[in-house]
Amino acid sequence: MFESLGRRTILSLASHPGIGRMVRRYGPAFGATRFVAGETVAEAMRAVAAANGDGILGTLDHLGESVADRAAADAAADSYVAILDAIAASGVKSNASLKLTMMGLDIDRGLAVANLRRVLDAARRYDNFVRIDMESSAYTGVTLDIYREMRAAGYDNVGVVIQSYLYRSEADLASLDALAPNVRIVKGAYREPPAVAYPLKADTDASYRRLVARQVGRGFHTAVATHDPALIAYATGLGADPEAIEFQMLYGIRAGMQRELARAGHRVRVYIPFGTEWYPYLMRRLAERPANLGFVLRNLVAP
Ligand SMILES: Cc1cc2nc3c(=O)[nH]c(=O)nc-3n(C[C@H](O)[C@H](O)[C@H](O)COP(=O)(O)OP(=O)(O)OC[C@H]3O[C@@H](n4cnc5c(N)ncnc54)[C@H](O)[C@@H]3O)c2cc1C
Image 1 (cartoon, protein in one colour):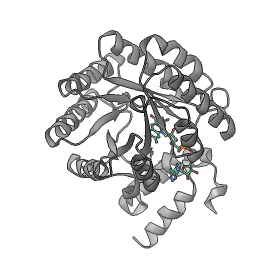
Image 2: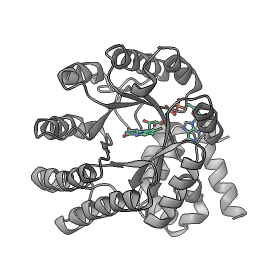
Image 3: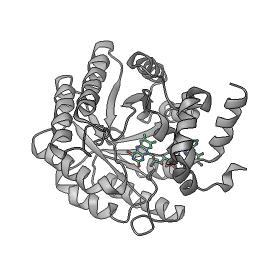
């Protein structure tokens, strides 16, 4: 019954302050735990270790988006340094994914860049890697600029994300070719107007295929991040160097398919979010698959 609720409707309901307050209050009962690995680094590390046990790599996301002050942005960067320390100390196989708004981008670009550099320096000490997640289209240009700036500054342990629903994405990839970038290709999770993004899923999917084929054809390291079996089958058929392609999925979604791909010898990485700021993340997961609302409501009546 929830299939009739569209993705855009759910994303707009999610930004309603009253709904946000209610869902946050009844937090875990709303099923957040299916998609979020816990609140602490220790819980997140246990989830990575379990994935590693199935032959699956991790990428850790400390949940949180735009922060309101410099102290919160600095604390977010500290938390990522702590994540990289914990990965190195425990020996699990994982890198990290972060959002520039959490590093302070809405307050001051320089602050976000300084915080990002601090995280990249920590990753470099451990020979680890950090992926800059892509946020809404208001941030696409600045995120790619900051990525270029980091590469120009000599950081080669950083990657970026391109969303196939945006019309601009093919040109954005072309603009990065000289850097032989490590790009994660996703469909895109934000509410975007038809002026900037394909309104139809078929067009987003076709664009996804083009973008993946483009990157694989150039031999660039490509992260195919989707749960869509047709797109995964398409990507596995491209004949990419197995070292240059990985399949990425979200914690709690299609876990069986993740294990199957890993067993078949593909490199698979699971995106593991943790922390207390899970509300916007959970709302995007519900918007992708309104049937998840049924799951959430069932949890609420029978926790
Ligand atoms: C590792 C990873 C990192 C990501 N990083 C970003 C990012 O930086 N920026 C960004 O905008 N987006 C990001 N996304 C989200 C992405 O943009 C999509 O919103 C999301 O992956 C859903 O699209 P899909 O490709 O799985 O295909 P869809 O066509 O949405 O789904 C295909 C099938 O997958 C299953 N499925 C998909 N979503 C769900 C769900 N929520 N619950 C249960 N089943 C589901 C269903 O069976 C569905 O039929 C990321 C996704 C992944 C996997």
